[in-house]
Length: 67
Image (cartoon, rainbow, N blue to C red; front, side, top):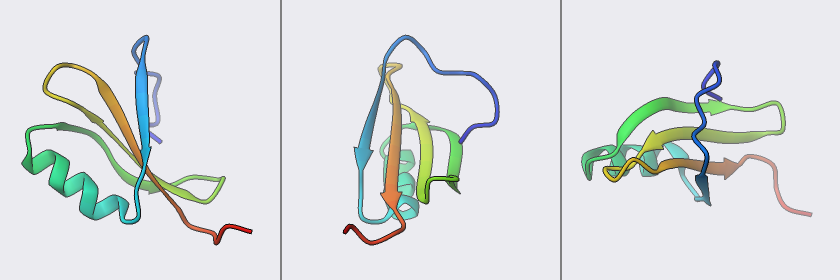
């Protein structure tokens, strides 16, 4: 979702119901935006951020209904 290899040794991902809103909230709370929400080929909306302690975070929203 970033377009270039930047992943550190460890990254954590959270499924959220609204990726753009959560991304904005995390940036407002001090996270650094790496990549704004983008639709992936596997139909999720992913954003990448760095938390204040340097931990890289992905927030994702599934775009297709669960079966």
